Length: 150
Image 1 (spheres, helix red, strand yellow):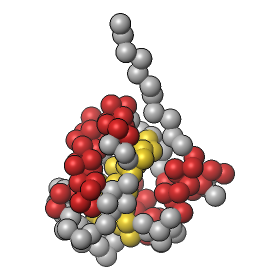
Image 2 (cartoon, one colour):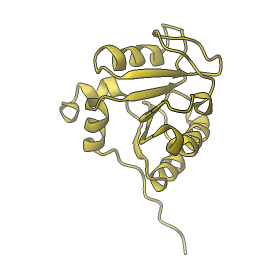
Image 3 (cartoon, one colour):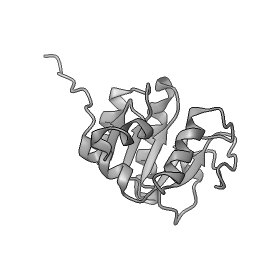
Image 4 (cartoon, helix red, strand yellow):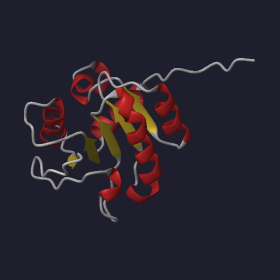
């Protein structure tokens, strides 16, 4: 008997809640490189949506006025991160999602957001099974400008 695998579908109500509820977002892949998409989206999250942003990048760079960390596990105890926004290649995002699941209780993680072009059905299912909301293969800037984002 073969198992029927359900493909992830984004829920407009989850997207709206994440965009419009004040929160801290850990942006994985965010560096000080202003030419990168992660930088522009993180700045949008800060300036337009009023979210706090925590940069997560192997170089742990201070970015957009915030202290950076090499991994989610390096974010200090007592810090609350509601959303983990993943700007990494699809082949690497599963490990980041697993870190988010592992750190969910300690950091208060409620959701993972896989950016436009970042798709991993198995990782999305693991996150959902762990009780996290999942948004995949889209961008907050795009969603904010659509009717579901308003």
